[in-house]
Amino acid sequence: NQKLNGSHNIQYGRGDLKAAELLICSQSDEYDSLRHLMKDIVYGGKVDDPVALRLISTYIDLIFSRDTVEGKKELMCGIRIPASPEFTSHINTISKIPIDFEYPGLPPNAKYSLEKSKGDQLIKKLKQIEFNVDTNDVKHSKAFVDAASSVVSIWKEYCRQCKQASNENSEKKSDGHDGKHSLNPLEVFLRNERHFGESLFTELNEWFSLIGPISSDDAATLTETQQRLCNDLVRGDAPDHWQKLWEGPNDPKTWLHAFFDRFFASIERNDANKILEAPVRLSQFFFPDSLLAALHQHACRVEKCFMCDLRMTCSFNTNSSILSYSTNSIVVEGIYIQGAIFKETSLSSVDASSPQFSTIPPMTIAFIPITEPLLELGETLSVPVFVSLWNKRTVLDVSLPCASENDKRKWILGGVSLFTDIA
Image (cartoon, rainbow, N blue to C red; front, side, top):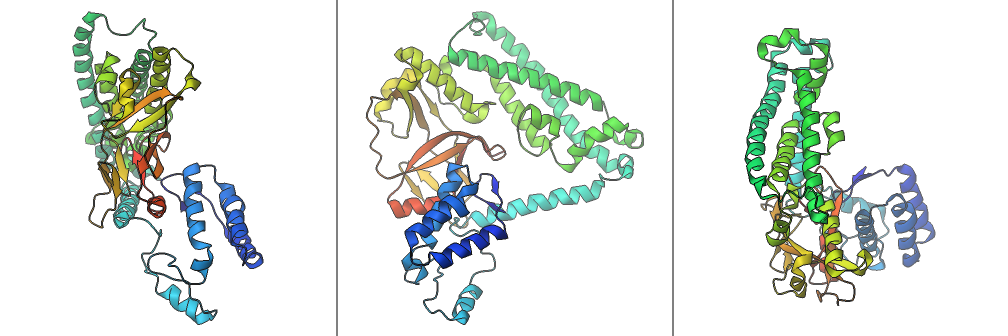
């Protein structure tokens, strides 16, 4: 069960391993054919994600080459396949593989991420044991009610702030620029963002009303409905009902923080021109990919052309030619990178003490005519920008500069990815 480059899980079993073994035995000297069969049939045949397929292809190109198999080229992590056919030589090589050797090619600080993930899973299991959520005794637990109350308290505080923000925003609408009758795609997008936030807030308000006010004194008198609704909260899981409304973080408190951050932002935004004039953070939108779609439509109206006549391009260069399309572009900041550090115009390696994430420089996203020449970037790596750690939907792909083809392979194996939000 291998998780590839932050994407979905891909199931491989003994049958896949046996098929690979038979291919190696029958195509031992035909490396081109062997790589093709491995990529497109044995392993790649189960993959529909281009990023994961690229990672698999890179591994296969690295492993199934004559120089690697004959021990002339390092396999990975200082390990070489023995040139000798002796069984003991291969056993000795395997014994030298480090115990913590899990995912070859990942950056030095990846171990921190893996340990943090294991720690989060352990904490969740301990909570399940503490609150004993699978037994009828749970409603008599004072700790259970206290844990649920902490989430309810966060909701109440946000409701108070939301009422205040709505009142302040009502006064700002006196200028008449609320976009109610606008056909501008960006104005329509902002209105839809706000309507979605309001609808979701209403749904959540009804959900919390079913719990009602609870305190530790009510531990022994919780109704069956209250107990059922609180079970997910004390386990540290955002309820399925919430996730169906909007896919957010797994932790209920973090989910509420993420929702209200976006909801408050949608209340404050009244002018689509500000999106074009000032840098934006994609993490402030419920649906950042819809923002880019609206920008595409807006650019078509400005250029008076069809959508197929424009293409999206990104640039980190402040002197780029795409800046001349200022009415068709936005500047995006606050994008996080994992697996490498990106400063100025190049990627650099992380070390074991580096933070798990760092931000990349602001980038300009524009829709320009397809007749415009492509930007000369040299060797580049196309890196997906995911919505967040909890939502692996891709917003767009960004081309990051690489020094060479070998450098490009290094970043692919390192699982370099971009995120709009890491909460």
